[in-house]
Length: 311
Length: 322
Picture: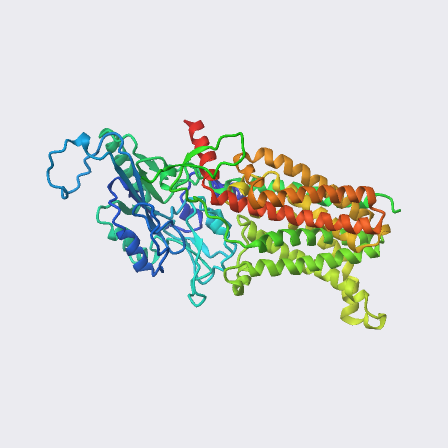
C-alpha cells in the first residue's frame, strides 16, 4: 500500500460516515466501543441516574427552583447536569404495551378503562451521545477533549481553558461551560458526561446504569447494544406500539451513529433532541475552500487598489 | 399538559405564518456560544489588523509613507486589541497558552491561533520598524536599526499571512451547530473579508493624507461592495435562520451596518479628495464593519436560543427523506 493510499485509508470517513472511533483516533487494538442504550419505554422517571451521576462525579447543584414543567426541575443537560430526565405529559395514544413491570399501585376499580383519564407520560433520561463524529472534540483547540480507548469523548479538566467552542459546536446542546464560585477548580471550563471513564478503566459500569432500577439505561458494547435496541423496537412494534423508534443507532446518520442511543416513543424534538443532527465539521472542507477563495479575493483586491497610477 | 407542540417565537408583523414545530417546553436544543461581545469586537479588530497589514505593505512598496504609517499603526492596534479580547473571553484566561499545545486542522480556533501566532510577530515587527523610523537617526543603530531594516521583508510576509486572518473568523463561526452561523458558511468568508477591507480602508482614509490614500479608498469601496453583495446572497441561501438577521438586536445592527456602509462608500466615491469627507466616510465604513460583526454575532445567538431554527430545517430534511 502506498503512503498516499494508507493516508487516504486512515482519513476515510474521518469527518463523516460510519467509523470505529477509537482505532481512527490512533489506538492500537482498543477494547470494544462502549456506550449506553437508554430504553425510554421502561423509564419510570425516578431520577436515580441523575443522583448517582452527581454523587459519583461530584457534580454540583444545577437549577434549584420549581420549573413548572411536569416533574422536570433539572431543566436540561449542562455543565452541572450530565444526566437529565425529561417528562412529557400528553394525551394517551394507541395501544398500551405490557412492559412486564410488577403490578403494584391502584386497587381494582369499577371504572371502565375507557372512562379513566386519557393521559400518558413520556420519560427519558438524556445524556451525552458520545458521537462517532464528535463536533466538540473536533473543534477543541487545546486538545482537552479527547477520544478514550473506549470510543467515548472525555474532557481533561486541567487542560481546558474555557474557550467555549465545544459548547457552540455540539449539535445536541450537551456540553457547557461551568458557572459558579471562582475557587471551584472546574468553574470556567467545559463539563459533560465522561461515561464514567474512571469506572470503565476499573471494569465497572457507569454510575447511572448501575443505579437504574428498571434497566432503562443499559451499558455495554455499542455493537451489542445496537442489536438489543433493534430487537426491543421490533418487539414493541409487534405489540402495536408503532410510535417506538430508535435514535442514534444508525451509523449512516449525520454523526456516524452515537455511542449513547435511545428508544423513543415520540418524535425526537418532543424530548428536546434534534431530529436530524449533522456534525458541523462535515462541511469544514467546504468552509475552508470558501475562506481560501475569499482570502484570495481580499489580497487581489488590495493589489488592484495599488495598481492604479499614482496621482 | 405540557403542550409539547409549540409555536415558534411570538408572532411578528409577518405575512408568513409561524412554523408549527414540536419542542421540549420551547427550550433551546443547541447551546448558544458562551461568548460575550468581546468576540464580536475581535472579529472587527482582527479584520482591521489584517487589512491594515496588507495596506501598509502596499504603501511601503509604492512609496506612500503617510499611508504606510497609518496602516501600520492600525495593524498593531488591531492585533493588540484582538489578543486582549480573545484572552479575556476565555473561561480560564490564565490558560490561554494551552491553545499552543496542539495544532488541529479540524478546529478553526486552533488554525486561527496559529495564523495569529505567525502573522502577529511579522506585522508587529513591521510596525516596530515604523516606530524606530520616528526616532532620532543616531538612535537607529544596532538592534533598532535592524528592526528598521527588517520592516519591509516582515511587512511583505505579514501581507501574505494577513488574508487568512481576515477570512478564517468566518469559518470559526460557521463550524458550529449554531443555525444562523452554520447555514451562512458559503458566503460568510466573503462578508467578513469585505468588512475587513472596508474597515481597514476606512482607517487608512482617516490616518493618511488625502493625496496618498487613493488605494485605501479603492480598497474600502471594493470591500463595502463585496460585503453588501455577499451579505445579500447569504440571506438568500441561509434558509429559515436568515430571519434572525432582521429581528431584535441583530436586525438593528445589520440595518445600521448597511446604512453606514452605503453612506461610507458613497462618501468615499464622491468626496474622497476632501479631508473632512474622507475622515467622515472612513469612520462610517469602520462603524459599518463593526455593526456587521455585531449583527452576525447576535443573529447566531438568537438562532441558538430559539429551537425553531434547529428543529424546523431538520424536520423538513427528515420528512423529505421519507
